[in-house]
Length: 431
Image 1 (cartoon, one colour):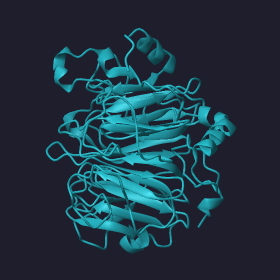
Image 2 (spheres, rainbow, N blue to C red):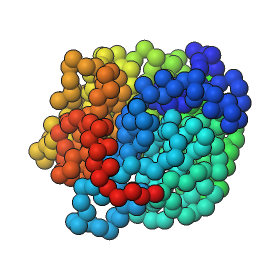
Image 3 (cartoon, rainbow, N blue to C red):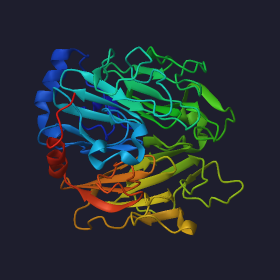
Image 4 (cartoon, rainbow, N blue to C red):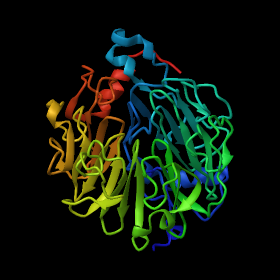
């Protein structure tokens, strides 16, 4: 196991394993960190997939733009009358954004001095997931009461909204708020709404967090992962049939098959989980109904956990709602639901081709400019190349792919931040 505490973490590199700085959290130190690491910030991640939206960070100005639905004054009831620019907004921030953490329907942004949150419940009022100590929705960025170093936001279903959030402070504590009816709070209860952030007890010092729709993961300094939350589809444990894991449990206990493997990343979809090992092997567990585990969806008894075959050594994996993306040797592979073209990148498939059960090379990405990062939303996907180019594909009906035609399915298309900035500049100033 690597010693996570020995790595120096820049908050902007939110897509890399986060490690704790030696100094404790005080405002002056955070500002010093930003100033000494400004080049890291400007070369860090540029594209982030939320549920039905995408966040874009300009590497020059560190301004953030949102493409898609939820928050920033968007009216879901507008329906057919909505125009393309209704889905495109600049996030009103008074300070540079040094870290961006998208959720399914809400977001967290860390600036040089403060931590901001905004979003909505989509189908119902908030459950407290905004870390602001109330059930009120903040559709414009507001400062959180709890300062965090890293945040992760989960999602919910159409009928029973289960929004939740977890965050990690710089001293290694994990806090949770929002919906807890699947054990997301990690406190042993199934309380539905939790507006006040509460510390997740029973964890050692944590250096990284991740979340799926209803399940969570946290990486300790010693390299051990802890998991908790919904296990109804065995997305957390192959050896435990409990529908909810209500308190954090070590991965070595829940998944003894992997006790000798070094897991470097965990990501969760609606009902499946994707794990990546140090040597580049991808493992999946949980729901396989759409091929999101790279298994035959018609298998009556799929293996509880399985490696993804047919891939080169992987460096990153991302879970969408019902699809999975894997970055391997600069190329992007997808499998799972391709209903909106979010897997193949070739637009909306024929009805009988909506499920991709084996890794498929995404079409339309540049071969001469290797991909260095991937991200997945509910039904859309994103990639960033070594030179900083951004590509989006999949569901675009809410503007999340940046296509002003708002197509139900977008082929792989390049998005230019300068174009986004110009479109936003033409809009009335808000915020």
